[in-house]
Image 1 (spheres, rainbow, N blue to C red):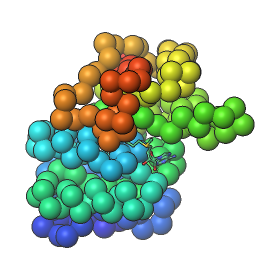
Image 2 (image 1 turned 60 degrees about the vertical axis):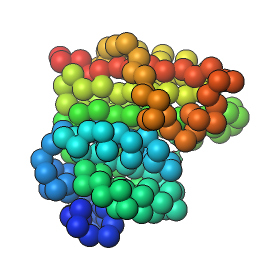
Image 3 (image 1 turned 30 degrees about the horizontal axis):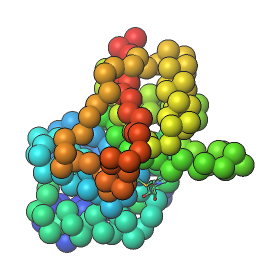
Length: 203
Ligand SMILES: C[S@@+](CC[C@H](N)C(=O)[O-])C[C@H]1O[C@@H](n2cnc3c(N)ncnc32)[C@H](O)[C@@H]1O
């Protein structure tokens, strides 16, 4: 695992063998709570959030290389020292590479809805994914979800409420104006957006 310093020209993480857990704590310049933007896309939310909260570390995960590269360039240019970027399939990263009870919050904003029934199996939110979120979150830490696809939103809510009572629903998180994601800006004002937040039960 490389551990980029913010003085380098890239903030990307590379897993040596894609099998060992990421030594997340040492991947950042300073120890701090770690929040993850799953499917960070072009990074509007991630960059705004990291800039506003220098006392929190942010990990952006996306499987699309050109998006990760773009966010990387913007983060370096902005001099943000508390961001790291990881190009990886999110289910795999969260299930196998993120250490247990290491994450202080997940943002899963506008996950691909795969609207056709025959493609639903590609959706991120299934029982195994929710188990992986639960395993990696610190007790009491939240998962924030937003989507413009209301049937998928209902499915996510039902699944999050169901899985072994792992999570409890809390008031839905609302982004500040400047934190709205690139996708959200496409829908704002003409499409309903479903938002929900859950936190890992303390047991
Ligand atoms: C609809 S876009 C939303 C991007 C961003 N969150 C936003 O709201 O602007 C979904 C993003 O998730 C990424 N993505 C979809 N499935 C993924 C997966 N299984 N693992 C990692 N990234 C994924 C896509 O590459 C894309 O950048």
